[in-house]
Amino acid sequence: MFQEYFNYNVEEINANDSKDYLLNNKRKWYDIAEQEYKRKNSGTPNLNFIFKSIFRNFPMIRTFSEVPFRVLIIKDADDLTIDIQQALRRTLEKSTRTCRFCLICENVSKIIEPIRSRFVILHFSPLKESHIAAILRYIISAEKISIKDEALSSVIYLGHKNMIRTINLLQTLASVYPETMIDADKVHNVIHQIIDFRVKEMLELALNKEFLEARSKLRELFIQFGLTGTQLSDSIRLSTIKLPIPEEWKIVISDLLGDYELRIQEGANEEIHLSALIAQLGVLNLD
Image (cartoon, rainbow, N blue to C red; front, side, top):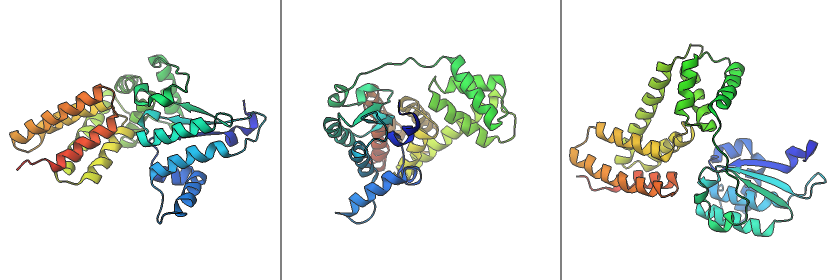
């Protein structure tokens, strides 16, 4: 539609982008947010402020083509906080003539109703395994990864038909076994060992009241390993049983985990509630 002006008129951001990623890869938007922030504050803008700045400023920039609007694509939009979604709602009301928004998410119930009512909602079925395999084989060929067919099938299975998670799993395996033939046993061993170790490490940090470090491990499990909230809660339960702590502690933690699992099943934000779980672990009276 925009032809040679595509790069000027279409922007793509991810709700899970970190501040460092935006600084290094979306520098123009970071600089605009920083200028706005420093007019009233000292220091550097936080992530919420940067996203709000992008929503506010992107529709204001003039298009370079005959198409009278620009396009902003927001991936993992269901991970946007309610505060940021409210800011996006106000932008939608003011920029109907100058910008079109495309929100991509897995759980549309996490998008607030005022935003959902302004969009046409399209539902897409998961990709077929044959299509996922074709994409992975293209990546394997381009990156020169040595992997057996049964190992590739295991990667597809563990990715639960989510393309992003599947590619992240493949990337993890390639980093662990560079220039080595990867078989199915290596896939399962590496994925489960790494996840179990990271979850155990996160729980120990939480119980030692080191919340920021524990939350960093949680975000790593969400983003780098592509785990869902349900998968993480299952791993937390298994790791809790193996922790060298009194049985009474394990009972309390398992009971607490059940409450947060129920909230996740009801469609609440997975990362927010698991962050609340590890925060509560740090303030539990387990003496």
